[in-house]
Amino acid sequence: MLDAVTVVIPALNEEQSLPLVLADLPSVGQVIVVDNGSSDATAEVAARAGATVVFEPQRGYGAACLCGLAAIGAGIQRGQAPPQAVVFLDGDYSDHPELLPQLVEPILQDQADLILGSRLAGRREPGAMPPQSVFGNRLACFLMRRLFGAAYTDLGPFRAIRYQSLCELGMADRNYGWTIEMQIKAVRAGLRIGEVPVPYRRRVGRSKISGTIVGSVRAGGKILWTIARYGRPRLRPPAPPVRTQQK
Image 1: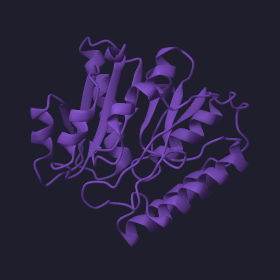
Image 2: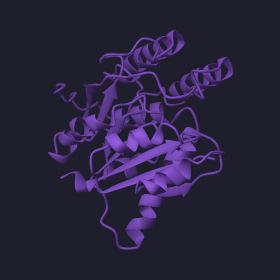
Image 3: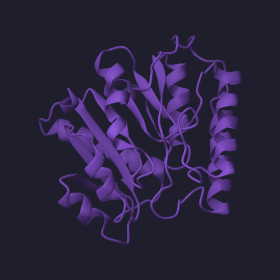
Image 4: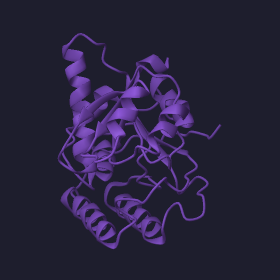
C-alpha cells in the first residue's frame, strides 16, 4: 500500500545526510527531494539514489514544501495517479524514515487525515532539540490548544497527510510558519488528526534554524505571528483525536 505514498524532502546542503535518509526510507510510490538552493552535491546524491529532484531557489522551508506539492501536481497532469498520502520529513537524518509506515497506516486505512510524528512524546537523543526549541514547541501547542482546541504536543516536521485534504487546506506559508499553518488549518477544517510518538536524534551537520540565534528568533516570531493570524473562532469543532500507538 505504500505505492500510494509520496514523500517530500526539503533539502539544503544535505549531501552527507541525505543518502542516510533515503537508504532508511521504505519503498514508496515516489520520493521528491526539493533542492532549496544548495551549494553542495545534494541534488546529485538524491538523483543517484533514485529520487525525483526539483529545485526551489527561494530559500524557505515552506517554499520548498510548496515546490514539492507543485511537482506532485505536475506529475498528475502528465498522467500519474495522485497519491493517497503525502509524507514530509527533513533531509538531515534527525527523523527516523523507517517509521513512515506507522504514520501513513491510519490514513491509508481511512482512519485519519493527518498524522504527526511527535518528538516531544517520543524519545529524544540528548542534544537533538535545544532548550529553546522544546520551549517554543510547547508554547505553540499550548496556544493552539487554548485558541483552537487542538490536542497537539509538537510541531514536528515528520508528518503524513491525506493528499486531497492537503490540497483543500490551501497552504501558503513559504518559510518558518509552514508546519503550524498546516496544523491550525487542519483543526479549523475538522480533519481527523492523530499523533505517533517518534524518536529524534541529533542531525547531521548544523541546524539552519535552531542552530543559530537569529534563526531561532525568526522561527519563533513567525510561529507566534501565524497563531495570532489564525486566532479567530474556528469554523467548526475539531474532529475527535485519532488514537494511535507506537509499534
